[in-house]
Length: 151
Image (cartoon, rainbow, N blue to C red; front, top):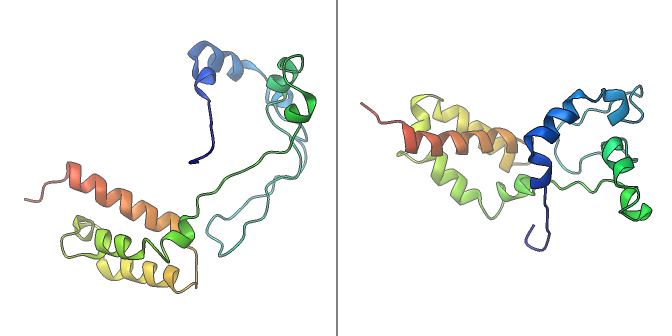
C-alpha cells in the first residue's frame, strides 16, 4: 500500500449505512443465485480467485454511472492479500519467534508453548499455511502485554 490510495470514509456515514442495509440483497449483488466459491486462506501457495466478474456494489455502480467512466465502473475487482505467509517464513521469522516463543511471552500462560512451536514449525517448513493462526498468536501476545498482569 506504499504507493496506493484507498478512501472509504465517505461510505462510513451512519445514514448511508442505514440506508444501504434497507436495500434487498438481490439489488446489491448480481449472480446471487450462482454457487459461491469459498477460499481457504490457509492453503499453501497461490490462492484461487474468488470471482472473475463483478457482482457487487450494483446500487453504487448504477448511482455513479453518470460520473465515473464505464471502463473504471465495470472493471474487475483487484484484490490484495498481504504476503504474511512468506513474511513469517522468511524475513520476520526471527521476530515472530522472539515475540511468541521467548521465555518472556505471556501467551504461554494460556496456550502451550509446544503447540505454538509446532504451528510455527509446520508453517516455516512449508507443510501448511498457518499465517492466520500465527497472526492471532502475535496479536494475543501484544494484547497480553498491554492488559494482563501476572500475579
